[in-house]
Image (cartoon, rainbow, N blue to C red; front, side):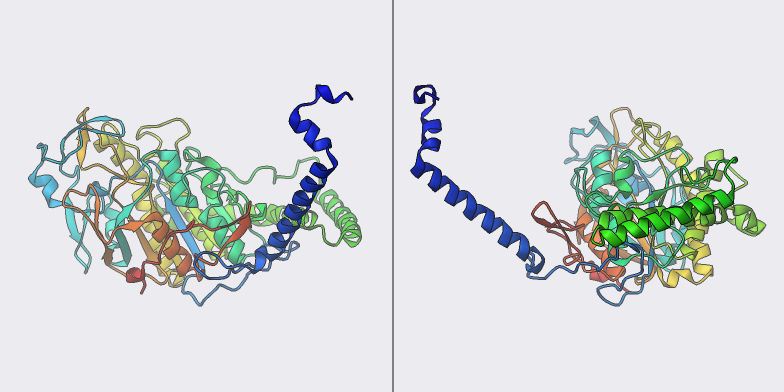
Length: 496
């Protein structure tokens, strides 16, 4: 090629001295990358702690594994209420809302997430002292209120976003963006399961569908796919488990036996093929679930007293279905499933209080409708776990993505999103009973005493499950990723 058609850069690349110089730099870079890659497992993170990586047999990814430290909780139940439950109408009693009802004190913002603000509004339901602790809880949730002495409230939570998808992501994965593992996936990745014929992590979606962030809330992202939540509920069993009527059990067994022989021969030739081993393990679990899932979902064997306690035969159809989901959650925990995430609310298309707790208008009606679905069955589930002695080693987490404002929106009937203060509670293994941590300000607008981040919340949940949130990491794209990113502290004040 005539050099006059080449650019100066092109001519330099063809120059022998330039070529040798570029090659030396490139080879040096490759060598450095190799060294860094080989040392990745030996490094410490920014805290000075070395990662603790679970030893996972690809053939048996769900095998129970030891925690980082002794812990009271062996399993966890996460009750998640999408849409943002109003803390000032449920758990966070603020007398000044009644005192300043209908007024607009100085300091109230002119505009919030969905537009102009209105006046301070007193709680739409009366608050009363509950239990021996005298905890003030509203009449919106009378059944849960009876268990106030078992709950450990966190009143000074705050989050990074006032948008529902990002809020759900942040609470459940530690990041507002998509593409990060859920808390349930982290726990099952670290601990495996005590159950041999059911998944380690089950996500029980609301009868109305998935929450706004969908499978992100229980996904595994860059963790091995084995640890994502398996999605089914009392009405909808896992997909593709039912054997076609024309296909006999003998045919099924013959097919499985043949596959096992073929897979075993392939693994003998390629013993290091972890992807194949994981795929085999997933199909074997599916085979086991063909037997275990119909049994676990058969609620007819539950005594009539249990159905009455949970409310499967009273109230709205949605409440009845959610009550069945609650019974299913207890049955899964009894079987040794490590993580059960139970959703109360969905949001495939916005909803505004119809499919979840998002109440920008008519909050008195929409919150009442959601509470009718959630209150009795959830209270029954917690009481049932306690009666069976399961609260001794089960951690219960009740959560929502953020709170709601102490004043009304411009429409005068709803409360807007509040990322600066909201309430969640813990119960069961390892947490104080009848205890309240932190506080929001006099109106419930901002976390004031002992502000607690979502990072702290998740760090504490991992700690109660025996996991060090700073050492439970996964090396991905050159970074030691973890549920709490580079933040978070265990909330020692709530530990029993």
